[in-house]
Length: 174
Image (cartoon, rainbow, N blue to C red; front, side, top):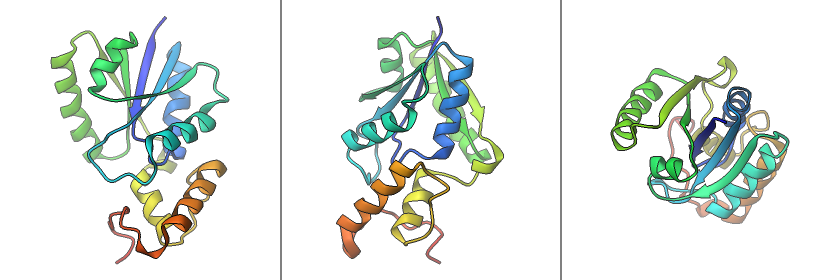
């Protein structure tokens, strides 16, 4: 049995993530989608809510298991006996980042491989930060995320009100 690990912050999970997880589930016997609890960036949702949204979104795929984790990704992969770490690639800059990360991970854990899945063309623009920014500005993000995530985003920004400073502006405000 080949177990793969698909790690991320999933803040929030979006259709691009779902596409990668679904495609990985067709390649590997089991895919563990791991929600990282302490990334070095501002989070919109706490770890528990990101975990719940990810579980709800992927629960229909039989060979996907969703868990939370902390610490080094390769250490977690070793702990769960994953043979492969799955990552999604959208654009060239993703490749550069993932390539460096894969080399570092290979140095730390030579027994774990990295598999990069190229995103479907319709999701090349999609990232969690794009979804967050569109949601924070009141734009229509309904085709980017599942309904449960859309509702959670709407509620979160309603709760935060006008004074929120979690979403870092990128390019949609200019």
